Amino acid sequence: MNDGVGTRPEDLDRLPADTARRMVLEQHRELKRLLSMGLIQARGAAEETISGHEPIRSLVSLIQELFVKHLADEEALIVPILEDDLPLGPARVAALREEHGRQRAELDALCAWPDDESDVELARRFDSLAKTLLEDITHEERELLVGDVIRDDRVVVDQFVG
Image (cartoon, rainbow, N blue to C red; front, side, top):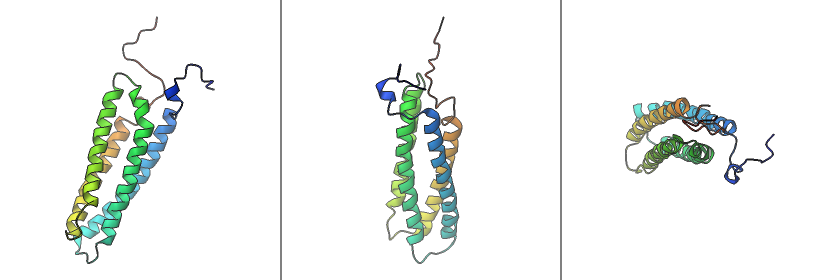
């Protein structure tokens, strides 16, 4: 039980690391499922001449909306934990924000795809982006969303207790 003794004020808003990690991983599972379904739809669209462009554009819009919300949630849940994890945490936060910026920009570019441009090309570009996003998620789960990185204790490298 935490009686608040030794708790810093900025920690009061932060979820426990296990809870934050679990929530992000649950979102990842849903995003991976959606991206995988989107890849199937995009491949079908890329192999055919589509008369109506609504299905692929709706898919891109939905994935952009959900993914951008996930990025914001992930930053709210994980960044405060990482920022306190010296010396590596701040560098991990910078890398995470850079990756998220790239992902947002790529999703925005797909959502801004002109109506008079080819939906087949849009489907091909979505296919490429979805594969990249799935790779990003896998990398993040392997390198960042692990108990050794996302944790509540503050381990300071070279700290000596004697």
